[in-house]
Each structure stands twice: as C-alpha cells, then as structure tokens.
Length: 116
Length: 112
Image (cartoon, rainbow over all chains, first blue to last red; front, top):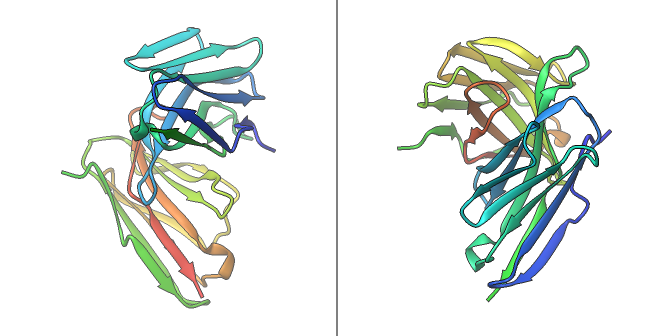
C-alpha cells in the first residue's frame, strides 16, 4: 500500500531547461511534505519542504507546489544544471500510522538526468 | 564535521550471524530513525526514537532490535541474519519528529 507515489522512475532534461518532478499521495492526514536529493553512495539530503497550509514554497532554483485537492505535489528546478543529476525522493509526514503515530513516508524516487 | 555518522559503511556477513550498525548524531536532535532501502530502492521507515524512547516500530522482524543508549546514538542490532536482510540501511535524525531529517551515508549490508 503505497501512500506516496512517484510514478516516473526517471526523467531526462537538457541543461538550462526546467525539471518537473511529480509526486502523488493518498492519505489526507499528511500535513508536511518534503523533497530529498540523493547521490550514489550517499544518504538523502533535504532539499525543500512545504506545509499543507501553503501551496507554494520557493528556495532559489527550487520551487515546490502543493495541490491539496488533487493530493499532488511537484518540484520544479529551473534552470536545471548537470549537478542536479541525482535521485529525488518525495516524502510526506503526518499522523498516518496504524495507531495514529506520526511518521514520514517516502516515495520510490525519480532519477533525474540533466544533460549538458 | 559529520552531522549523522553510521558505521560501518559496508558489511558483508554470512547467514545466521549477528551484526550491529552504529549511528551517532551531533546535531542535538531528539528524534532518530532507521530506514531500509531495499533492492527496489524504496526507503522504508523501520524504527523511530524520540528522546531514547521507541515511538515507531514498523512491521520489522523481531530479529531487528534498535538500542538508544542516549539521545545522540541509535544502534541497530540484527540477529540471525537472512539473505533478505541485504539492503542499504540509513540512520537519520530530525528535530522535531517528521520535519527535515539529516541522513547518514548508509550501511550496505550484504548477507551471503
């Protein structure tokens, strides 16, 4: 039962263009959403987050959009750079455990290739 | 100065052995986690500790036992290792629970 889905396993983008990574979730109890970036042989590193009370959060080249009614969020990277090539994980936090416990659930990740 | 460090980075061991992975964070966070990344690359929460107290215990075999001697450490002990335990295990910490987490570099466990 995947509560957080990233349906695109990979995405290829030309340097300088926009990268759009998508994420869908099923549980309306999630109230905090995060994006992580992961390079090979390293742990994930936090990139940007958004609270459910907002619909947009921007940090430099990275913007996260949240559409609560559609249970959808997206990460925009513009302009994309070759150093952005990595796996991007979407994560959602909330009281969604079987006993109401607060937890963070990750999507399967999307591998982004930025071509020079 | 590493924020979350876990050791060892690689661990190759035989089926049936018992092994431990250590994790330490110097961020002063109250919450620490263990995640497992399986062969399909899913990152799944295993355990979560807050102030040395277990608060999340997912459906994990009881061969896996976390131990938190203090707020800065969360070690993972695995008994009677099985082939299916082969994965990358990540330790992480956050403050507070559910917010942006800092991850260690991972421990690649291979059971042969």
